Image (cartoon, rainbow, N blue to C red):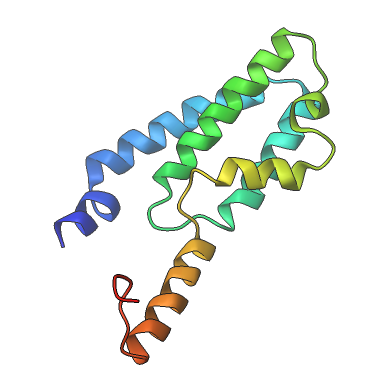
Length: 123
């Protein structure tokens, strides 16, 4: 139960996260328009997969902002960074985040193994 309160009802953490998010989004607004567009599209796509509190997703977004800022500094077009298959780029970013699809997979496997009387360690 303590974990629940730490992740979902920790007011200080929520306020701090909101402040941090606004600061990072101000950085996005200072990027060129094509970078802003791609960032916002990626962000909205990735939020569809966020699980739990979403704090791990925020880290990915902040890292993406840094990557985009470096691309701007190097004079690169945004698609030179993401590639033309932006969905695959998102998939790679999501590898380090806990997603709903991962939760669904775990639940499916756990429920079936539980029903059939098997646990992960026995074969």
